Length: 325
Ligand SMILES: NC(=O)c1ccc[n+]([C@@H]2O[C@H](COP(=O)([O-])OP(=O)(O)OC[C@H]3O[C@@H](n4cnc5c(N)ncnc54)[C@H](OP(=O)(O)O)[C@@H]3O)[C@@H](O)[C@H]2O)c1
Image (cartoon, rainbow, N blue to C red; front, side, top):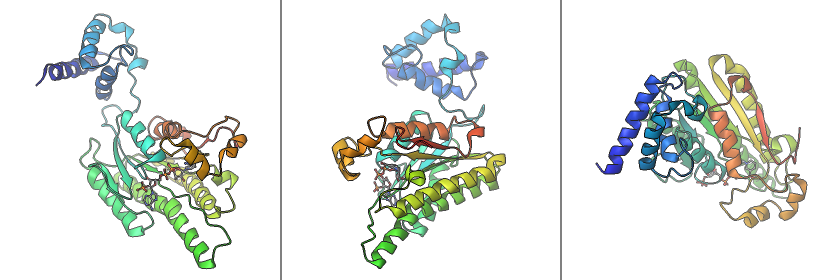
């Protein structure tokens, strides 16, 4: 083991010991404490690695009172002694979903990512326009989750979606096929996965959290070419509220997030604006800009972890006040 490895191990031993002796710290905080130390949360931005953190901890050991419970509060809050949760985030190969997956990982959750193509050990591929593939995704995700700390999926984030134009001038067959596809990918797959998750949580007597990424269009409606998209997102909101009301007493919580325009282009803002009708759309956003994936991710991570149970059924807007309800 390298010198740094020794120091890293020593640091976590120290933090474990400290967590045991301190009445302010729960065992579940230990892993967070080690990460926080490594990230510099214990001592400020000048701490850049475990060696620095170790030295800083020795210093702090002589003055433990300056570390408050608030400073050590984990960003996620599993019940005392419980392992960190595991989340499945659909459509997390890019865009908002990738930002959500990263935000959850930063909070210490194990995250199973998903896209139409697999790319990595904790990433699953499934085409959500296919009902059988959607069901398989759940089974595959449960199998992957079995090897995580919690051993199961505790959080489901239904984020995958398509936003494809379908003008009413298209042929009947085309328009109907586009309607079916949009509803299938944006709503039915989320319903399928939500049902499997809720059934599993009920059967196991376990709590769980659902976070559904809907859209401002659920409330405001969308462009003339996106009847299907707005209908799917409104359905997702209604489904979320129904689940929240049905299973709150069982500890199953459900939230929906309704982003307005969100630059999911991965850095090419002009392309994103062009894909949504051009820069003129900014005139309709009092904030003066579109949302960022990291903003939606912060909201999703909150719903997936710290949001108080009384908030279940909430639908959160993120649209720069372009649609205030
Ligand atoms: N961006 C916005 O302005 C905005 C606004 C409101 C709501 N939203 C909602 O936010 C969510 C994410 O949007 P985004 O802009 O981040 O989308 P995005 O960048 O286009 O990414 C879409 C994600 O969904 C996956 N996906 C698409 N079709 C799929 C299919 N048939 N089967 C499985 N996975 C599929 C994609 O996987 P691949 O990478 O494999 O294709 C990708 O991971 C969507 O539900 C969207 O409706 C977005």
